[in-house]
Length: 428
Image 1 (tube, one colour):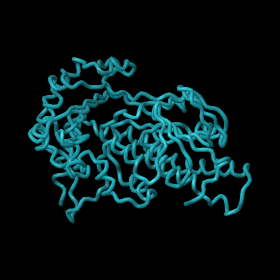
Image 2: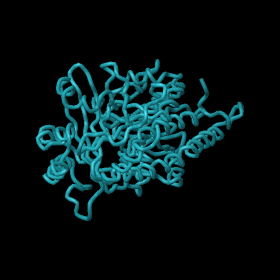
Image 3: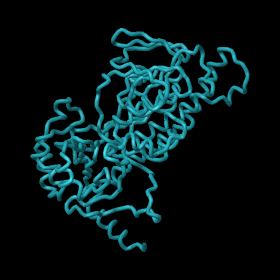
Image 4: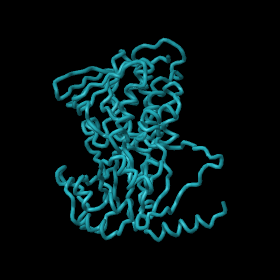
């Protein structure tokens, strides 16, 4: 166990029990650094949809947790874990007007899977992060942040339920709408990305899934679909003995100044309404099966949808330094929220937690000598700056890359077909 030097051994206070908050807590707990996680919502909140975990993010985490194998992780969190699956995805893109594959990566020459990425159920991942170690992670639900004050090493936090807590450091892991960030960096507001995104979820029996979806999706957990400047994947979020839970999304760029499907300031109720313009747009696309079933007016009206407002955040280094002086460090979407179609946000959040925990445990500044409290304070601050030194460029580049990727994934269908033709003519 490596030593963590702070001012008073007060606990680290983690705001937010999402993936980044729980991963941070698990890593700190593993190294016997006292910490408490505070979550505004109740313990039974549901985020059951799936995400793609990438090797460059999950391998460092597994290493820090004691060299846990990828297979162990996949068996615990894959959407198809209950039926012996491991979250595989074929990365193929299909023409939604014909159902035919346009782009498909070449399989490994030795017939094995490289496991560069796999799908994970978000709920299962959160549970695994909380429970995968011998020591219990301390999570306090229904604790919504009200205020905090103090400085690095000596912080006092108040929650809306009347609970007060003291800590040495606040880690803001509370997402794109971070309450911590709003308290201290109120001038930073999430930027609305000018894209249309609708999302829906539904349940099928095993018989329905095997008849409607399985012939196209196979053993993959994503059925990627592209159309004429729009994207509509169908994803598996969970499979168990009761059936199959799936999600779909429909995304495209905003069209002009008065796009009827772009509603960035709608209320929660308004964002759950099913626009007739969307149903007409989907019908006009003349989708092939199974996209025609999942995105039919009848199916959407039966199961509902949500108009997802895509937002992006990136906090400048000067603002991060200012927050650090007040005892706050950020991880995940609280300081670098990436558009959902980029496929990197959750992975960079995991990498943040690994790099932050390693920075907090870095004794290279100390030189093995005993330190006074003032020196310890400077040491902790230096470690946190070291974390940002490593993470800042990585996350800045990722936010830019995710925004650029939208255009690549939403090209005109003729461009997709040309790419497919060029690929088919390449020597194998």
